[in-house]
Image 1 (cartoon, rainbow, N blue to C red):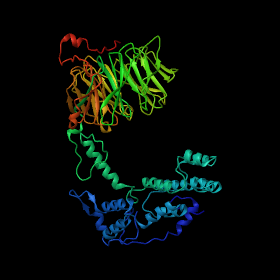
Image 2: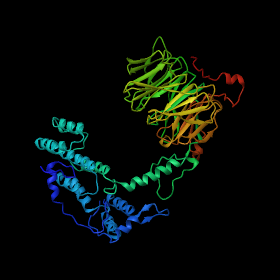
Image 3: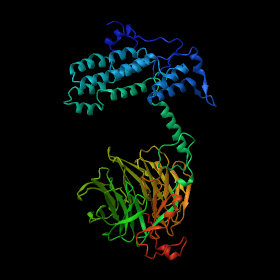
Image 4: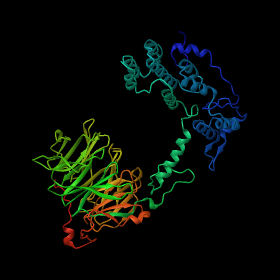
Length: 600
């Protein structure tokens, strides 16, 4: 066959390289400067000078690159005439004629011709050329299969793809696709979009990742740069909490403090005793609360953000201390304090099932993301998995497993997290059946997971809240301080836009809000007259959260400019409530629900 070409292509392709593809030679075109547009605009005679010319007050922006990404943005927005005019007036082409021809060959499915053009596209090393050739030939192979040309596909696999001598495992996978009984099976197994423009554009995006950006500018480069700048501005804005995800380009982004919900909009007083726990549903339409009065209440959030009582759930014989919403927000689990777990239908308020272990009791529960399975944990140091009919499917038991206080499952169902009254956080990887233990400094009172399932919060009795990552990349936690917690169960949560804030209750009857990223304490909100046991931020409305207190009430918080709503109440507003004053009589404080660390 003769000596190998530097391109490292299959023999049939090397022969074609002796006849270069016709293209217009442009004098003065700088080496490696390529990119997409008309490909016919005249080049400036002194383009080399443009290469070193810079823009901006700091001289950090190369003019050639700046003009090229603007031209790319114009073409991608459909402004073909404007893009061509920019090339003509600036003398700077978005891409070289060779790159333009290469892109056109790919989009037209001219695979043999594109392989010939590939070797003339610019200074690319041999391994990159092989990888690019592999991607092109893989597309050719798949399209032949898609069109039912099995023999031609097999020939391409044997005489072209295999001779590249790379990615052997993928070659074997491609070979297995020949046996696919249908097009649907082929698309599924190959994880491919089918023959046509969509998959070819995706191929170009993959090729761009192989080439130096000076040869082929990554798609939507200007958009990416602008998004990066906006991300930096948003991350630097400690009060960013907007419902609008689009940020203005006309001025540097900066939110005011008034984006944080700091105003009491409603006081809900339907509970007859201390309110211990509350949680918004995943769709933000409901709020569930639990109380020492042995009931749980489901509240409905109206479109005008008012909150009204929907159901009072009775049936527990002991105080209710925990709730967990189903992924679709149609069912609710309630757990009595050292008692049973009950499953409720939210639309009817009916109890569908009671989960019980005669020899033990439960303190916490959680849903799997499929909405058909759940787990419960409690006093017998076991975690049980159930279906909705109450059948026990699996259990996690170990001699060293402590009493379970809190339980949660990540949104993808890959990890289960539990805490106890001791100092350990147990993270179970349900996929690989492994366990990781995080040893904390002090006893843990509560657990909360982020919406994306990547982070967890725990409250400690040493007046600190710690943030850990599930994957175990953090050697030490992020810490939030300032609230009071020494005796009672206090719960915290993630919240706000992109869950950029941490909120927590406190034994001093106030709500505390920190910036999640830097740990700065942003707000301390008075209003309650007893220990604030729990807080929950509406997952779809960053301007609403709720707090539950030993003063028997729930407060709904919103933006301060909505002060006219602060007098609106729901529940049994006529019932007299004895509020516990901050630093009140010792005998009243002694009646508050204490946290008792488990003795080892």
